[in-house]
Image (tube, rainbow, N blue to C red; front, side):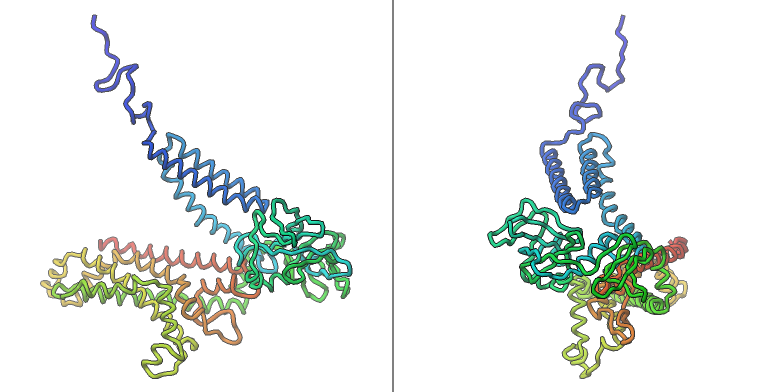
Length: 537
């Protein structure tokens, strides 16, 4: 009797070895030796990046951040060491970058916008109390002295200051706004100066001088109403605070003046009976007060709405002009009988190929009153960037010059995709050149160029470099030195957050959220209205 077949045609029978590369095969999922080495190298590099990211978090005692870094590293290992979940291997990099550079910054900005975070309201209440006591320290006779080395955690320009202190017995300490901690593993010279310390960047004399004003106000709380302050650049002393916090009354008493400052937990600061506050406050939630401030407060609302109107006019003007100029040049070079098109197109594209940062600086110098190109050529002494309207015209002109080559390239590609027979048919039907362009060519062009125009408008609405490098938002009126005539919302936000004596991060974050909502709303409306062009397509 014939044996019954149990295998399908062409498939290996029971017990037969599976072919390499097929599911279930012996070598399924295994790549070449070179591929394995590349995978090991990339995983090793990612692990090194994880360790590099975890070290400053460990120094700062941020255990939640360390857990997040460890979780991301574990996720990457689980995905790329698995022989399954192939689609996830392609999705993980994009998702991680999306979270790191888009989602998390947006969420952090939104959370900051509902707080009073600023120079005087950075930490919590305990940190504010410690800073108040430490900043009021005076040097009594016989005070404890230390050899001082100034360091930072992070970059030398913006990192948090840290005092590396060595006492008379050679014991080393690290002091920050939180207090003193014992410093281990540091390299200390016989003079008491620290030359190397794990987790800290020691500042050079030039870097210390650059932050001398901040250094003069910095103090390390040492407990019991005492603090450590610098005395020069190489020594520090521990003194007694003249302002002491009393937990019973939740207030700070100044022993020199007798003033009593009571805590206001809604505003995050200590105030006396006359409404005077101490400089050091703490971060609290303020709800939508920051939004209401620039919408309803007369002082801030006038600046906000004035800048908003100019911001929209700037974005619309630049978008319209680059479209008109770019399309006009593209139509000119689209004529079949024109010779030397390649040379002309190269010359037109040159501004787009150059560095925009360098070009903005060049345009700024061209508008200079004393030696600028325009005044020299025209024999004038016009302060182009000192007048409201001429400064605005200068900023728009520079942006059009840098932006029209891109629109020219887009329009050239769109024109080449439109069959010439359509225009010829319109002319046969009696249409003139302008009628053929308006009724045939332009509608077909707008199908391809409308998304580009919306993106151009959104880009110019937040075109920080154009304004900041040419005019820095100026000129400014004497009664309002914060909001300039050429300021966009983005430059105004930057000035509030980073370029003022008292940085207002919460208010700037609220403005950032408003900018996002405005641009998103305008883009959605424009895209919805452009659906009518689909019928043309």
